[in-house]
Length: 263
Image (cartoon, rainbow, N blue to C red; front, side):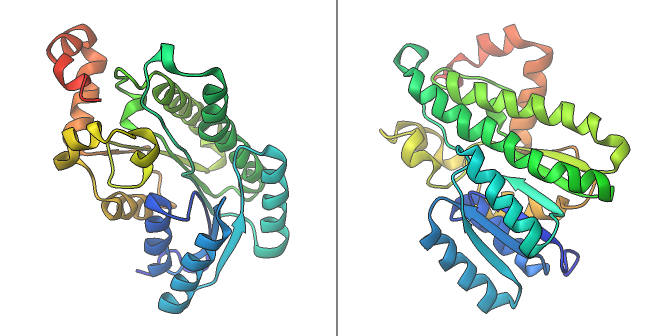
């Protein structure tokens, strides 16, 4: 269980949800954790829990990933004061469920700034060190929405398609440098993500029995750290649906129409 002993693991969006659960699981395995999020109070609480319970080194740094200047400053602090990053988990993100005509352009810019540009900016900060060291792991949290786009997710799916495309290209770029890139494509998860994405609660009510536990997703992510794992797709049946959709999109859309309109 100590296979991450001493490794510097940076997690964005670490104040709750998947990010917090990844931090807990990585702490159990001896990692040195750098927790990043907008809410420093919540981060300090998570940090305190981890250091007390697991006796590991943990650091909390306030970061809004939509602010690229702040990203540069925070990662400079990490590299100079804490150590070079072994694993970067790009977890910060948000979504909303709206039809395209109801989505404001400012909302579009904000979501791309966090889900895509912020992820790319954080990744860029660690790449020179990982390439020079010829080791490291970048884990990008995408979504099953990156594989099957559904009504009312035009914006969210677009950001996650971008994450998936970026990750796939980056994986090839880094192959000769022995730096791993993993995309995580989960279905709906029981987190506060839906407090913003599904204000009416309709979607959650329709699919709550299928929702993943954040602890399960986090366990799979941490198990994959520093291994050459290409993708983590959860749940399995949704992964199969995505593969079927890739092969037979028109048939899937015809027969899956009812499921697609759960939002």
